[in-house]
Length: 232
Ligand code: PGA
Image 1 (cartoon, rainbow, N blue to C red):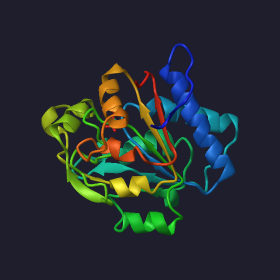
Image 2 (cartoon, helix red, strand yellow):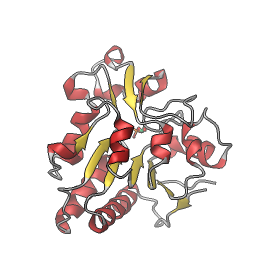
Image 3 (cartoon, rainbow, N blue to C red):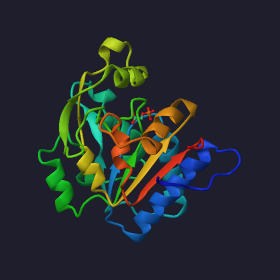
Image 4 (tube, protein in one colour):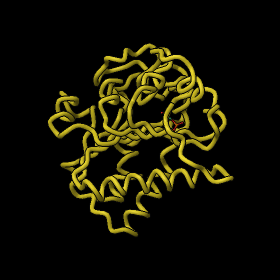
């Protein structure tokens, strides 16, 4: 079971986002050329805002940090890509140089590049309602590296509000694999809201199974689960 960081009475997600941001700034302060894998989705938005605020307050130097997108669509218009999301919420505000922004869409041999860069120091994750991490949908083998995927209907529906209609939500993506994520020295998994409680409990209190991809992280030695509900 990962550590569940002490929470205040309110279990407020802003508090959790601030806490996560503080851990990340500490990492970048101690290792200015850290390699960090970044998620997209509703969950990390508040954390990214905290991260930008805190980095400005502490004058954190992000110029040498290598930022790896966890995943992206393969068939989305440019404005709806995860690259665009990350640029808007974190990479542009922190003035990450273009040379330090990486996406699996643009790079062959993503895993080799990560390894050649020293490996991931930190991977930040959300969790899908079906237990996916990044775009590793149920059934993805533990020994998977960066690969292309067909998105499940559950994932397409969850991502629906970035598009005018459900039909426009992409069907395909590319994602770091489970093994790519497992190799990260530290993992921070954020989950917000009661709707995520059942899948988080299944993933971290239930059996380890490829049918619940997040459960494959149970044995990671430095996994931090941060959520605004208690896992029993
Ligand atoms: P969400 O997505 O943050 O939009 O809930 C999480 C995920 O699918 O990993």
